[in-house]
Length: 464
Image (cartoon, rainbow, N blue to C red):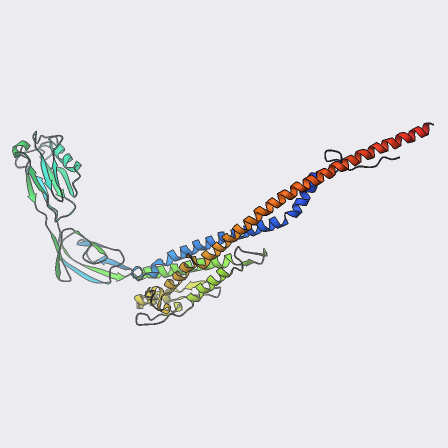
């Protein structure tokens, strides 16, 4: 009798590949887990997309910040008709106007100089005596005792004391052949302050070291005909927003004018930033017909709603009151093109700014007062409010991200449970098919034994 065939063994002769069978069965069982993990990946991608949008929104808000605040948008420039008399710098808040500055006299600090007519110091190492101290009285009182009683030692001691506003120097008032060094002490911090010197021992201890005092001189000028005095040549409190540095005597006119180019640049940046944000919102919620695949937030109602609200503000019409004359962006050259992007006609904008700077500015900032009707709040102000609310604690984007995070936690809990189920199922399959493997192996062994027995009986019969 022909021996019966058997399948190749997976290790114990049964012919069953238990590992392959269990793997195939588990791959089928992993369908629900794969679906859960796919949902988690999708939710994570959406959270990441919302994060990117939030960053884009923050960037847009940063770019329009100066258009929102009236004081920041009304920037000015300042110039002077005579730089030999004064220089001027403007922090942007000074009000427009002309300021006639006349009869300038410079302030000068108090200066104390050692009297070289008493004793000639031919070297910075010349001795000034052997004992004694100097007391300098200004904003504080400091007693100075030199470590080395020389001209240089005295200067070094004064400077090392770090007395606010006080410095000492050495100058040679003689010649290189016949030097005569002088100590000079100057109050550098405030020309109205005074320095008093006194020795704590007799002057004779300082070998002719006494001082000549040149008192501080208060500066003065006339502004539009009115005389004012200042103790410093750097004046910060005369015209709000301006720092004036007096450099010489004479007359000069300071002109403060509206900075039209600054406003134009801010509005141009507004248009550029708007298009960047709008493109981000569009791209993240679009569908690629070529790849036949939607973006991370394709069809997302939150993004679609936010984009509609933003574009609705841009095309809206503001209210008009005594402070405004423009109520649509198109009136100053800002409008949508056929492709949906925002464009700027510079000539229209610059003409409007030149005609009425403040009213163009108010088109963006409005009053900035939250108690006013929203129709009087400028476009930049309204957009900033909308976006702040969207990304705030209870905003649309924040709530959507929180909802997705909660969904991920729920899905992860399901995935963990599914993992446990699959582990138990794999263990069960492993036991079942291992047992079957052994049973088939046993049957194969028995079949082989019976075959051998039949063959033996057949051979015996043939030999008889």
